[in-house]
Image 1 (tube, rainbow, N blue to C red):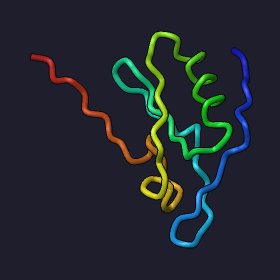
Image 2: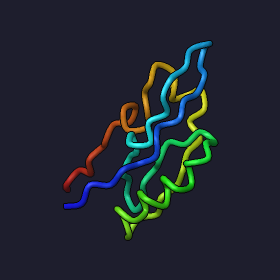
Image 3: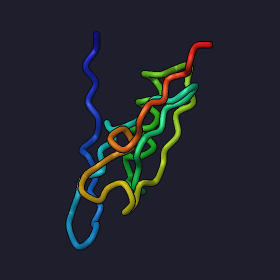
Length: 87
């Protein structure tokens, strides 16, 4: 395996507090990957890097702004998988 570095994580100000926006808190969905972004200069580079890891999926950035960054949570932390039911 190969270890890859990601640029330093950006911060957002939420409720007067500085919180990190965790790029690595991405979420893998059917056919895609959702990556938390916040308008930082490194957003596009990180999306391109994660796209290399998932070549057969569409990788998109979702501006988490104040919604997901509050308390430090990210996309992966606030989602729950719902498996398909076999019939």
